[in-house]
Length: 194
Image: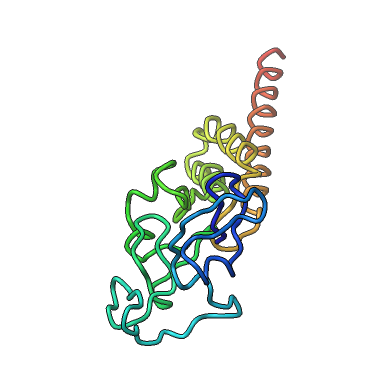
């Protein structure tokens, strides 16, 4: 995560942040006093080992004996490698990641992630097939099943991999049921006229 200049908002050089408390911006020349988390200067080449925190180093909120490698983007608690959860470009502590407030649309930077999804393909198939047991209900359920299958065709299917065959099968069954009702109605109307 780059540290921005307080005047031009461009990233300050890491070498300047590591050596002195005040840093000169190479773009606009403004002086910024910055205190950054030491993990900013660690190499990004893989996970940092969860070592014991040395004297004066930040420690994990949940594991006081372990060295902190990041700060939670929501609450600011320091977390060790074991506790840090990277999600949508931010680091979270376990309690913020599982908090109910995160589910609100604008509560925090990682808000809006999904942990459940409506399976519209299965719903459409059930609505198309279940009324076959009591065939008069297909007059109502077939258009509903066709609507659900077509309306939610492009929606994400599931959190796990699924295919669209349920939606296609539901649409085919619904079209057969609608066709059957149209044919049956036309047949009885024509028979009644003769």
